[in-house]
Image 1 (cartoon, rainbow over the protein chains, first blue to last red):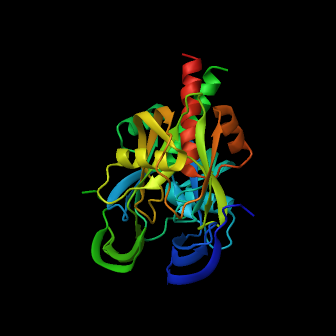
Image 2: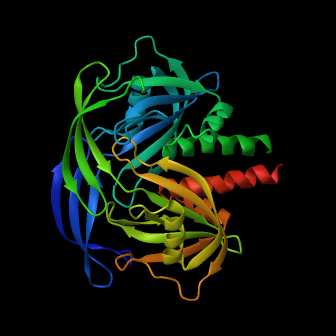
Image 3: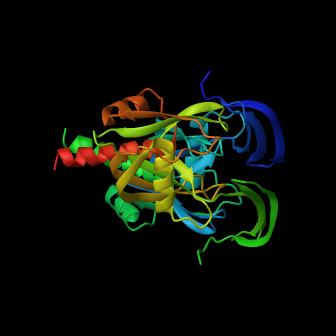
Length: 185
Length: 185
């Protein structure tokens, strides 16, 4: 048990949606007082840093309603109930980009907004990409535009403030670090 | 206008809390059909990569109710209404760590969970740290433990899967890249 553990006194479900659940937990604090926590439960997701045979990064430009703007991100998608993250990654890569991949390597898993949500993202590096002749298509309410960019172009997009997404910044920086360490080995 | 823009037909507020607001937007898709979007509105936040005079990274170990576990993260905190992010960063640094800083440099701003939430985090690099004799204390319902680690120790914490937070992984990797580029200039 963590010494600062917050014990649940009561948990009230406010909303159960198709993507998120909202609940309010009343907790007992380490000092004996109580507090309320607004909590979003999320099924978790995968993100894929996919490198094409000509060494380009696949990016997805899509409209994101929470911000009412388009964002450039690496491919990503929610886990289906009970689905293994690797399976989600393969499915989302195919649906969003039309590529299959031979190799899938977990880079890291991380919580995106631990202050209020439990969303956990598994970030994969996908290599050995092959364009499929008849890929499964995306969800019918998803509209995305694909970009394939070199690492230098991706870095430039960041410098121009055209990438505003945590997982995408992390993934591109991961490649940049890998390059920097390789070049100077 | 983005070509894949989703026009709002109706927006229904489900919950308005102290931290988050939940709303369901009905949108018109580019194909003319409609869809519902579950959206979390969040005031935004700052995170601080704070480097002590002896070149250590300040980390915060705290219990996070959404996951019912403790997480090791860089210091962070929510924006107050109308507050400039730099001001929030200075306040949170003082309250969570007891340090003031002379220099604050924006590393990047990013959305953490653009699929369902509009939380935007401004990540700062804080240098010129000075321990305060009488720092303002944290919110009364916040209990944190401070760690000061070298970059190598931080990298080891990541390899041991002891850091599971997106902004913290990004910040540590940022320093690692900076070191890699500097060493080999």
